[in-house]
Structures are given as C-alpha cells and as structure tokens.
Image (cartoon, rainbow, N blue to C red; front, side, top):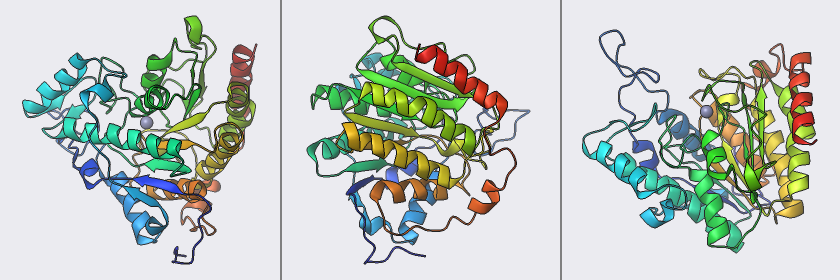
Length: 374
Ligand code: ZN
C-alpha cells in the first residue's frame, strides 16, 4: 500500500524535519562508550540512521506530500534561556569548538552539534507556533539531537537541550497557555523534562519507562513533584518485558485519568521508539500498533480539552529496522490518514510471548495508582 494523491488526511499535521538534523555527529563511540585500547571504535547508538530511515519511509510511501512540511529556524540564546542558563550554552559551544567530545554525561558532540541542536529547538518552537495559531492541528518534529534527558545545566543521555520542555515553556510564555502536559513513552525516564517542571504545577509531566534503565537513579513513582508542583509528576516505571497489555493498562488506569483530571490545553509527546520490541537498548515489547493506539488515546483527550493540540518531539529509538514503522504508525494516526500501511513486522512482534498484562506489571500499576491518586 502507498499513500496516493487521493489519500485523505483528516488532520493538518506539521512535519518538521531538516537534512541537518542528520548531520549531528556523535563520533566513533562504540554504543555509548568512548573508544580506547579495549573498546574498538564503532557506531554510537544515537546515530542518524533510525531517524533517516523513518524520514525515508514517509517519503517512499508518499505520505510526506499529505503532511505540512516546515524547515526549522535556529533557536536563539534567548529562546534556550527559557530552560537553560547561558553557561550551559557556552559549555557546549566550547566543547564543539575544540573539535568535540563528551559535552556532559554520555553526550558526545562534534563541531556543528550546537548549531544543529539550535535547529532542533527551533523546530519545536515553530511547531508550537503553528499549532497554537491553528494553522496545523498537530505536529511531529523529527529532530536530532534528542532532548528529554537534558537537564537545565547538564547535557545528558545523548541530549543537549530540553526540546519538549522548551516547547512547553514557549507555549506558556509566548502564547499564554496555562496548563500543559507531557506524555513521554521513550523507554528511558524523561528526567530532564521532570527536572524542568518538578516544582511547577502548571505542567503535568508523565513518563512511562523501563524501571531503572537510564538514568539508573531516577524515575521512581514516589517522585511526584515538590512544593507547588507536588502531584504533577507521574512516573510509571514498568518492569522489563512490558508489552502491549502493560502499556495499555498503564494508559487506561494512570495516564488518561491523570490527563482528564489536569485538563491540559496542549500535550507534548517526547516520543522514543526504544520501547519497541526490536530495540537494542530497551527490553520492552511494543509493536507499531501500540504507538498508534497510544497516539489515538492522547488525541481523544486533546480533542476534549486542548483543541486537539499535540506536538510530538522525536527522542530515542535505536532499531534502524523497526523505528520507521513505529514512527509511520504514529504519523498515520496523527494525520488521520484514511489508509494505513501494513507493518511487515507487526505479526511477528504481536506473537511474542508476554504481551498480555502480567501480575507484576499489574501490581506496579496498582502501586502507582494508589500513590498518585490518593
Ligand atoms: Zn530512550
């Protein structure tokens, strides 16, 4: 199946990409380790291939002409100051200018990385402008470098700037939106987004992640916010091996009720497809249809409270084979395409044992529910 000229898309979906996103060079690290006398140089996990192939599939199937393409602008220091101090930008600039290296924790950069990271932030801000203005119903920003691990004063976990958090700040500060929610389905904890809004009651931050994967010391469900922000941070640390049943139960029991209670005016989705079954870093089990299902559920909430406003920011996902199909499934739902492409891997993944909700997964969800909604 291909999307032809007569394919109908019910939504105006922004599609923010740039060739330069693929030029952010994470050097010849091996996985996430710096090469040396005992580690052969290789390919960094966060290399362009997964995203380039997702972009390529959307082009090859002719879905791209049905989306609203936009070339991102470069975010200014002032834009970035909504979350990060100048010292953070200066530090990254200095590492880039020296030829590159680790700019924080597990975050290698090269000479052009700062300029490309500005384009990633700029793409998110552009998407917010378009969606809030009503030019687009929703948007997918296929950016690199990713953002959800970046803390205000530290690059972490392949992330330089907090892309989605900056988008949320921009929606509030430039457009006057009051309540924003973020729903992060990347397999790793959205620690950076959490850090930005931990004491802020105007942003509900939700993260579904594999328990104690990365960062290993964050993401517990007992971390629910502090001060005025108490009760507006929802961590759902699912056990390794969680699949369709666990994620759907977590959505129905936790994510959707939390969003219903909060009534966000806009939803951001830090979208990592490393929670898919074929990812080399994550141990979760999702298939493309699960991302489609989660997208549809979020759209129902967004239609109810947020005029449908959703901005998806691309995060992790390290299976160059499978990320394109997970991303495509998400885009099909976001754009309301009247046709869907058949994921060639779907049946294989769906047939994996352990897709049903298990006792330990249910127990975790019950524990989170008791803590968060008490
Ligand atoms: Zn991740």
